Image (tube, rainbow, N blue to C red; front, side):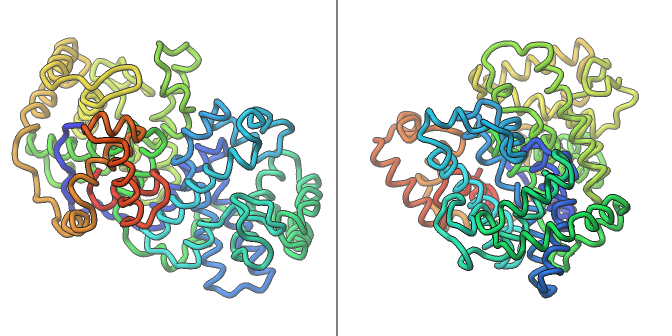
Length: 499
């Protein structure tokens, strides 16, 4: 993806709380849940923690881990798609406890064998998210063990009983209670939680939750959104964090999207600068580029990987991607305006875009720039159904589209002009210096290749190395980055500015 490197723009940092809410929204979409599921589950988990006598520090970890419980689910979406077909629908069925949801797993060694590597990816990535956000070690540890069970029958099944962090049990019960209460009704939810006591979670906690569930649901149902936000804002989430983390988590859903959102953001900001837009417009365009793919989490991987033209019904799901991005803005505090702008990414100047069908006069400059940046970056990147287009071919496509009125011609001219111009601002050297000190140049090449979905053999062919040399480099990368999965290494390397 030959797009200018992403500079560090002032204003790219946001509150940790806003980043966490955006990640919770993405997680809920990925798991086939209502977009307030994680918020509701976090509040229920807090009530359970307080009823169990937890102190403020533990309650804070319960909130943070609840909101980030699904932050690793984009990372294993491709794995769920491989074994269950629909990565979103299958996970929704799993969470609801639908009969026979795991029937297809019998052909791949059974449920435990199939889910253990996927859980490992999920837990490692969600733990890395918590670490990147600067949250407590208690929160990070809980996320790294979030699928363990009291009887040892969880995934991966290496911990049991009191060895499992108590936060894991509290958020597990709350999540199940929220889903069961919504899907099966309160009485059935209380029975299911009680039945799981002594197996999935401690009997005492299960009984406590079942006893208070009716009262908690009643209170939660009457709670205004602002009050719920206030109840979930821990002190640690008042700090600032780079918005790029959201982009990196979004792009983990599809390996061939690695680095895509950052590339769009960087190009959009540079194009705005080429057009002499003010610094605020540049920052808005940059942040919108980072988050414009939030709604992608609502579409199963099978549709994104489809080699042929999509059916009408499948295309309608794709057209809703910017709608879901806009909806995320309604729920993510300081990101509201940026997410609204991001939801214009697929609008076209002649009104032929989606989801609103707005024309040029209704689109601010940053929106017209974002649309062109998204199109250019996609054309220049490889996709499952085609190779990356050469620069001259991609440029001609954009010019032709502008001539037909679909893109703003002035924006397209500025975008093409800025591709080889000096960067808007010098890239911060500290992260890059640290990353280069950690990994060798060849290790970076190997990581870049495998992060985009290449197997060791494919990376060896691409880089003209032997498979054993690639394997050695991969092992070294994992050791140096303290990771054991490609997804976690990709996320960590992205935060260091390598990908």
